[in-house]
Amino acid sequence: MIFSPSSINLLRATEALKNNQLIGLPTETVYGLAGNALSDVAIQRIFALKGRPATNPLIVHIADFNQIDSLIAPLNTQQAKNLEKLKVFWPGPLTIILPKSSLVPDLLTANSPTVAIRIPNHQIALKIIRDSGLPLAAPSANRSNYISPTSAQHVLEEFGEELEFIIDGGSCTIGLESTVISLVSDIPQILRPGAITLNQIRSIIPEVQLLERILSPDAQQSAPGQQIKHYSPKTKLIFKEDYKPTKDLQKIAYVAFTQLSELEQKSFFSYKLLSTSGNLTEIAQKLFGTLRELDQQNLDLIIIDKCPEEQLGLAIMDRLKRATN
Ligand code: TXA
Ligand code: MG
Image 1 (cartoon, rainbow, N blue to C red):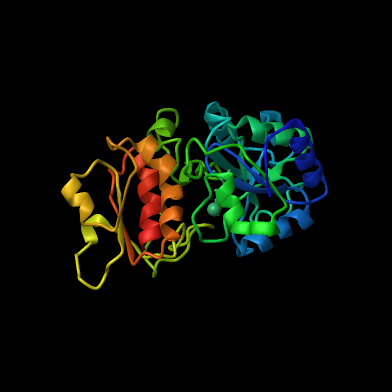
Image 2: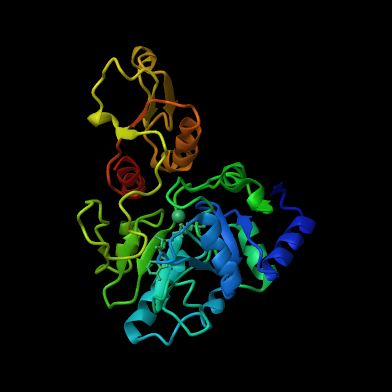
């Protein structure tokens, strides 16, 4: 069920977390499916409810920087320097991977010696983390491989009665999952692009590298969560530039990033405009919700625009390349 973020409901949510139950947690990126990060029982429940392979590790959410000390192993000089620089983006849409401490369950990290940590920039999430006194494991609150949820209603659509508690924090202001960066080796690597952009990170760590996320089915999986097929609607999704009109397909939706003429609009069964001016922030905010809505309409095909792979456009295109693959 969906609950408003009243004091009494937040108290009930923190009690649920302390009892190893899961809650739907709003963050600025996407909604999370949250549970006690230090409890094997809660972690197992997250994997089971999402249908997530046990080989794909979870992110730990904390509210205050000093909470990190108990979760990470002693850092080398380079790692400590890089963490010190990157913490300016916290709270915010940046997840940092570091060597883990023995307190962090192997189940959470899928037996990896590293742990992913983030301080979300969302007052409700921060309050729940602080009040529960727990670090919270929270992957996106969707069934494995479906589109990430950007509203409480989306989380309800995913899990129905199977998730007792969803806290309504409104629509996510960013709408795409966080940037993931690994500080494990001396040269930091971005594993997933997000709203903290490559350029922003480059301005403080010039040597940072962007890991080419694997899109070829033949390529070997080099890091967790790098699956080819991800974030996909059930309806076939292709880029507009790959679309060739045929008579067989009747119900086609077009998701545009800039305004079309009325004549062009009319040639589609359904037309969604994400931004009148190609504004990347607006496109990111509306993208997942729009794909979700269209996916419920029994369409033959969804076609979508591309945007330049720069700034936030890099993250938007990363998600779309996976969803169209
Ligand atoms: O914005 C977000 O990050 C959202 C909100 C809820 O915070 N969470 C999220 O979690 O997107 P999830 O589980 O859907 O994505 C986490 C990504 C996965 O690709 C996972 O493989 C990767 O982070 N990851 C987690 N721990 C890792 C580790 N130790 N090493 C490498 N990758 C890791
Ligand atoms: Mg996810």
